[in-house]
Image 1 (cartoon, rainbow, N blue to C red):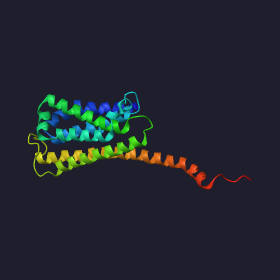
Image 2: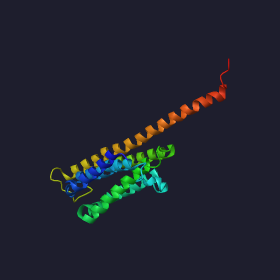
Image 3: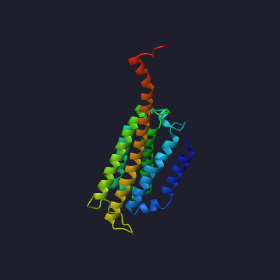
Image 4: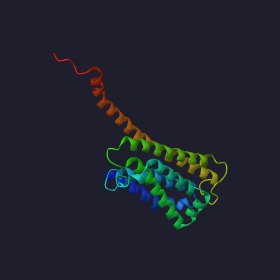
Length: 223
C-alpha cells in the first residue's frame, strides 16, 4: 500500500470534517463547496489509489459492483441530488443531514476512484479504458454543475449569509471552486489512466513487431 497517500488522505479528511469548514459551511456556500471538494476530489482519490491492488481493494473481490461508468453515473446522481435546494438546506441545518450528506459524498468519491484504479495489478487495458471514460464523465458533470452555479444570475441557496461576501457572490465563488478543483482532479485522473493505456499499447506493439516481421519476410538466410 502507498502508505503516504493513505495517511495523507485521512489527514485531509480529518482536517475537512474536524476543522472550521463544517461550521463555516452553515453560512457560506463557498465553504460548503470547499468541504465537498476536499472529500471527493482530494481525500477520496488518495484513499482509493492507496488501497488499489491491496487486500483492502474491493474491486478484486466483487468487480461487478465497481464498474467505472456506472460508478460515475451513481456519483452524478448523489452529487446533484444533494445540491438540490431542499436536501442542501437539510444538510446545512441538521447534524443528521450533514452526516448523511458527507458520508454519501465520501462513499461516492471512493466508489468512482477505486472503480477506475482498483483491481488486479497491473490493470487490464479494458479496466483502464473504462476508468478513463468514468473519470472524464465525472469531470464533465462536475464542470457543468460548477458552471451553472457560477453563472446563475439568481440565488439558489437563500439561507446562506456570508459575513465576507454578498450571497450571490458567495454562490458564484462556490461554483468556481467546484468547476476548477473538481474538474481538474477528475480530468487528471482520466489522463493518468490514458498514459497507462498508451504505455500498454507501446509494449504490445514492441512485442508484436518481431513476430509480424518474421511472418512477412521469413527468417534471415543462413550463410
